[in-house]
Length: 108
Length: 119
Image (cartoon, rainbow over all chains, first blue to last red; front, side):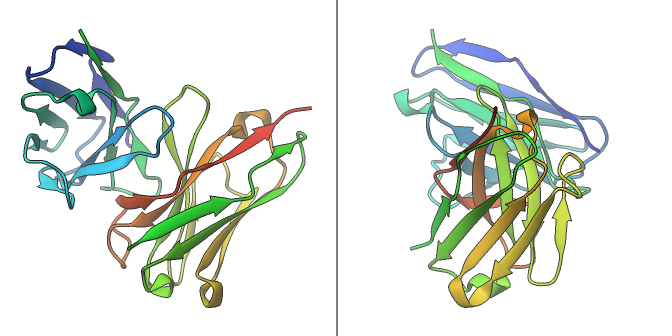
């Protein structure tokens, strides 16, 4: 099973700043990594898949990069609605599909 | 418009059984892989199972206890959960796969249904 480790656990930023979230895999997942956003009481929402492809309707301020074992989600110029928990997820070697533990982006 | 709606969550005693339903609309249901993902209270996301047009797969934590089935005539996926344990307590989400062939990514999610296992 591929383990995904996200860092930091919490990121405290102000609106307008740039958020950089990290996801590290226990073995290579090639480019088969996605990012999801989850707000309290809501289901997760797909943001990015295959490392850097934005899902339908996702704003351009969300971007993904990386390959192999190290991946980054960048949120440029944080909007108030971007404060949420973000999860990475791999589909390289499944089942099982696995998620990271999440990074909470909170308002500073 | 694609919609995914779960139902069937409830309070059940340890060792008991429950069946969850997932109704999907706006897609050719029979061709898509549909997943179950759960989230324990205050915790992260855990993939549980997937039903494709021809196969089913399970997480080790539920293998042998949970069974996926689908009724394509009703556009509905089911998750039969037996021998429930306290650690199965979670919100269970049904999620449509991004691609019909089963990419392993989830692009449409239901609102979730709460399963509580407690005496």
